[in-house]
Amino acid sequence: MKLLQNVINHKINSITGDDLLSYGKQFNVKISPGQAEKIAAYLRGKNINIFDNAERSKVIKEIAKIAGPSTAKDVNKIFTKFVN
Image 1 (tube, rainbow, N blue to C red):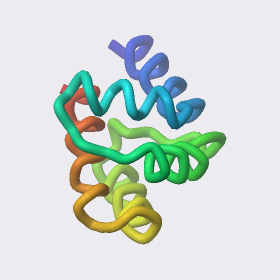
Image 2 (cartoon, helix red, strand yellow):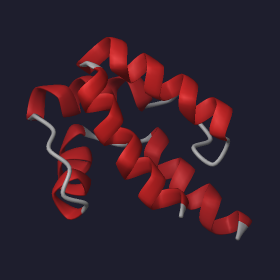
Image 3 (cartoon, rainbow, N blue to C red):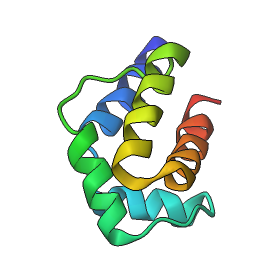
Image 4 (spheres, helix red, strand yellow):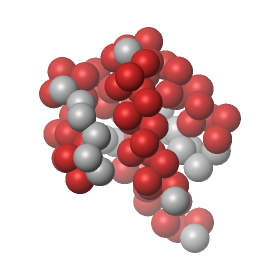
């Protein structure tokens, strides 16, 4: 299980805007290309552990500042799909 968590966290920490758009389509979450790029730029290189609820919550708050609360809620849905 730890290996899978490491793989998922690595993907989140090196995500591109196109990747985020693809996941949005896959999980039926609407996100604009501009928002995806801004969010991906924020996430890249941060070494975030989305399996840690407190850390994920902090990241979602930062995403809300970047792209708005509605988009942050949608990104959280994507993260939740990865975690479960």
